[in-house]
Image (cartoon, rainbow, N blue to C red):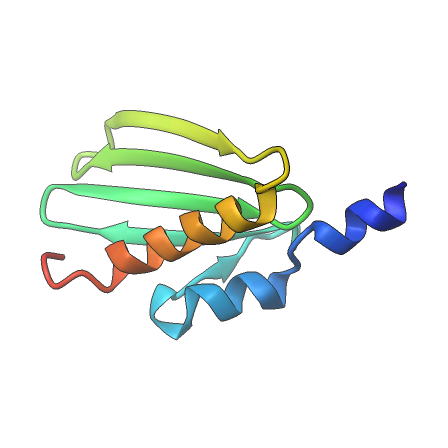
Length: 100
């Protein structure tokens, strides 16, 4: 069972391939996740992408460092990998947006 699970979990290289070089993703100190920072005029958003599960963690702060919102998304079910990839592509869309 765990072997089958390992086959569907995306690894670091797969996540980086989807995010691309413009994401400036940085690996955390424990080498267990990638962090992507998105900066705009009014807020900063940090997205944490763990390697071992299909989850994303978001945290938005204003320029004074006040936490505005934090959230997480879990992906489950038959479309788990596809939904996770789609969410990663949404992050790429934000990062490459001309509005930022």
